[in-house]
Image 1: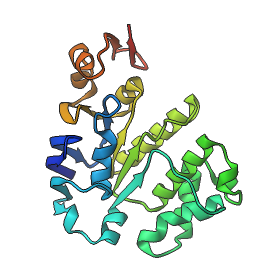
Image 2 (image 1 turned 180 degrees about the vertical axis):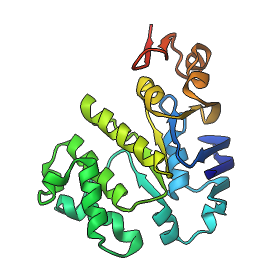
Image 3 (image 1 turned 90 degrees about the vertical axis):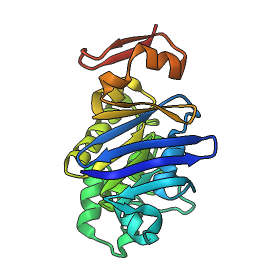
Length: 242
């Protein structure tokens, strides 16, 4: 079943006539060079960016949904987050319950534990490192228990160990019958953890499919202007410029 269906999505010259879907149980990686349109695509889904075309969530048009209902169904994790106030980690995670207008203690506790931030609940979030803060803001999204998580570069500020942890977490979340769409620059990680990949190039959909179908020499040459060594049979997959 398609949780997300996108048809003829356009945003000026940033995105042009994009057609793709996101299935229940799937983690879809959005890849491409800087400026390819990855963040714009996620912003359209999150309701931040106006667009032309159609986006449907479980068959219902997202534009027609009340904002609260959309926020309950779609959890958005931006590239970077910060707080204008000296909030504790617990306070930040609690923000994930705003769409539901409650303070579900079980959901907050579970989200903190899953994201590995439960030892810091009483600390102020601005006293944590950038990578630690990134995991706290992920816990905020998890606390909302959305059907779909939209994550814009969720591992960009994390060390290698936490990159692996977060991607495994997101994959398990998708496999629970929900779904995840994330933008990601590391192609090796994308090949390892994503069920399918969406390769954008200059605002257009260059390729959509399984990692082996998308991560070809020809596609990477066109999208990134590189001659890459590709070994998807390796464990983990290897994709590096020659």
